[in-house]
Image (cartoon, rainbow, N blue to C red; front, side, top):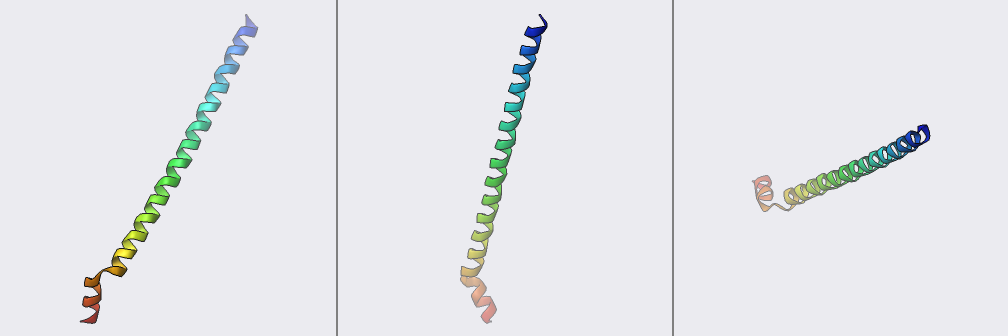
Length: 61
């Protein structure tokens, strides 16, 4: 009886460890996607500012 309980606990602990590792991995991937998205948005904003003809005419006046 005691041996069956130990086996059940071992499987449960193993499953919990696997789930925690998957959650940590998912969080890491999600954060890297968010960071990449923010960097791309900043680059686009900088390109728009640099290529905006209205800003060139305002500076020349």
